[in-house]
Picture 1 (cartoon, helix red, strand yellow):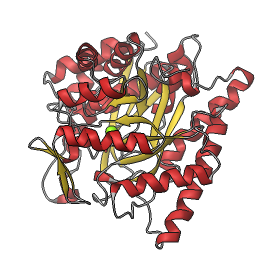
Picture 2 (cartoon, helix red, strand yellow; picture 1 turned 180 degrees about the horizontal axis):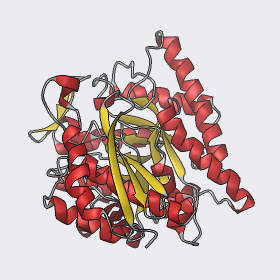
Picture 3 (cartoon, rainbow, N blue to C red; picture 1 turned 180 degrees about the vertical axis):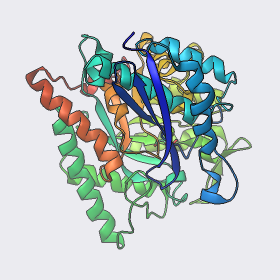
Length: 428
Ligand code: 2PG
Ligand code: MG
């Protein structure tokens, strides 16, 4: 069979933080190849798939030699001879071979890079761009982008506590128009930052270094940048990734910058105030991953007006998405293939979310490479939203630019998701 997996080869490459990561090439009997690369998170949920890293002193303990040997050994033995067109079968075999709940034996990095490489090989076998292969003839929309303007939290040495200050150009009438709008906001934000103090570079995902005295100051400057760029009419809205698990300890939310701490009730009140004062449309991980009551009560309070995204809270798990739906927590899911380990499980989480009218946001990690697979997943699965980091640095821009190419190829058939990508009830 021409689409049988014939050869699997893994190597170490380096990610956007200069850390080792896993790259996998899969070759089929027909000779066509597919490649996958594992991204890496910095703010990780405690229930995520874990990477297999070598430990020790060299490269901060982050080398991936063991993951490579898993791929060349038992993963290759299990997958060679399998049909690359059967992604669910391939992924099921990987999950069974690993046999742990958190992918710690084979390594989430080994698994996801392999799963991605098989998917790309399957698309190549059909001689199709990946997004077209995934769409399988169904209509797709180009995603509403969520683009970071200021980076914080674990991506900026905890200079501020909130992790991502992003914008959503909901009023754009095309994907390329959306990027133009964001570019204007990014430039404006840079000018405002430079007025305060000399610019001191960017955080891990390319957003401006968060040189602020309080977390709220970042919200004020971002709002000013949006207005200054001419989008104070609601056509560009704010999206926050609070990544609250990073500072939720022993039941308290502790803001290191302000040296204040809040119990869940007071924390939700602070968020209420920010939501009232700034043009916020989406909030990710507003509470810690263990604060189930907080998430349900936040959703009850704001779910009719805000997109509430579970990232660390849902870890791209269909089971967790369903449990959150039953508990009335969140109305959108962040989808990161390496958070769960395989392409098929990522798609299952998306389907579970979509079945209940949730928003679905395909997302990069803070550690990325030039690989653009998430652009294909966002479009091919018609996820509606894509979050990649900021509007600088090529590991980020490669993803945005890839969607521009799709828009160009689609020509007058290109449909921009815009507001239709938001959770049901927020789409009007
Ligand atoms: C997140 C991601 C991307 P990381 O929390 O959403 O911003 O960060 O990859 O470090 O988990
Ligand atoms: Mg997040």
